[in-house]
Length: 125
Image (cartoon, one colour):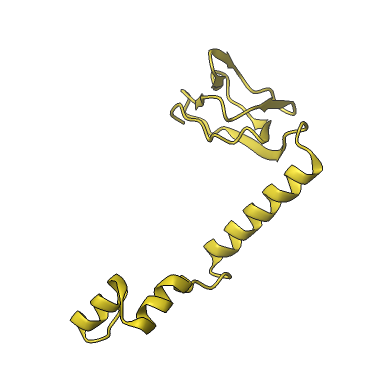
């Protein structure tokens, strides 16, 4: 995995080594380590991190995300709400509607939306 950051400093990540061939590594910032089988390695993935497996064998690591322990209960609840809403939206469980301002402009016959409808004969495409 190429160096990257997920920018989420409100979540920590633990990796549990399940099958780790000799030579596999994970690097966070300037620190490089290897996983150990049946041992947890915990990191803050908001820091740049990368992984490597120079072997021909598969590496198996269970990844567990959890709230940063310094978050307040209110912060956890707010973030849980935002993530739950995002997941519902991505599944299509949250209906998408036109903004009220666009609907009002269409009714009045003004704004870009109304102009578009007049030019295209009322279609949305």
